Length: 257
Image (cartoon, one colour):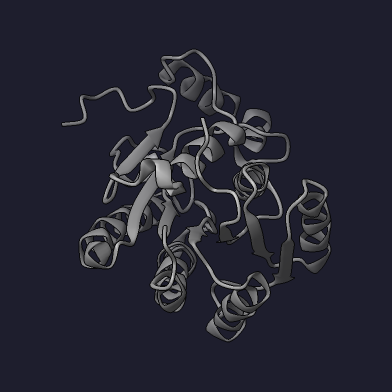
């Protein structure tokens, strides 16, 4: 399928590894020029070199989405280097890290305000695009109430729920300008060095429970999430906005009305 993305310009936050890197790769494979960030300069440089090898223009810098003085100038710099922005992918997440009030603060700043600040900053560029799109990377943790005994899970799920609601509301607000906004909510996604790799080693029962919950019989891959994101971001998905797509192998065993 031709996703009609060739020549488009996208920025992806947190794209030096994991799901973010796979999203950037998938966009590059469709002929999209890409701007990326993460907090580590060396990992950004390595990812940019890989993306350029796929035959597109790629740029990147170390930037912290929790620091507006770092994050906002990075977006403007990427827009200048790319020559505009058609697609904004807000992927950075602090994950279910530490507990307590500090954990709530980090989740809110990273997962919610990272998307809010990014969206507000890219809007002037998206308004000039012929096929503008925003995709927010959320989580099924934002729509589930299953108890998980781990530090930071309550903050993480609550902030992802806020992110999904933000995306739905922005979709209505921006629709008259032709800007589509959708969310993608991954379930358990496994890759070497990722969160579920850590869980497999440190909390094997939690890993086995997740494996059993995924009715498809396995955990997902970052590439499968990336495919969903790139489709939603593409002009081929031009009649889809305000949606939250679960990419979870059937983990959420409910009927989504």
